[in-house]
Image (cartoon, rainbow, N blue to C red; front, side, top):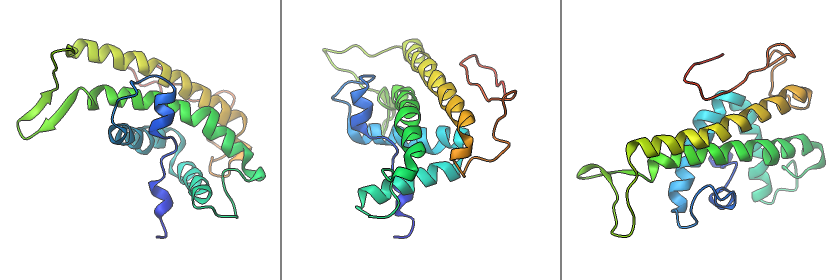
Length: 181
């Protein structure tokens, strides 16, 4: 199909597990769901749809074995660095934040339930909130590094508008409950 590239995830469940922020036995489909939320909502708000779609197209072309423009094409080196060094860490940590809720609570025919086992003790809502805040700190740090990279190299990315950021107005992210934008 024409828009198949739009289904490309910019990181994988294996990469999320490689960062060791989640247990290896977490279901890949749940991780994939959290990656899609992280990419299609949170990352899109930060870097925009055009840049995400261009990266998806480059990755899709590589996966499909195209000999044309891919993420590995030498002229796309800035995109490859952006993806591997900045976007993947952002997505990994945001995925951990999303998974905190996804794997803790399930919607079943009985309503919203919390899984329990005789060998595992379920976390309290406060503990789930703490782990979300913990990973949110790393997520915001990676977002700030991503923004620094994009601002310093915005000329290398045609999808980034000229007024995206200036030396005096660089977007910053922090977990303080206040919107600083």
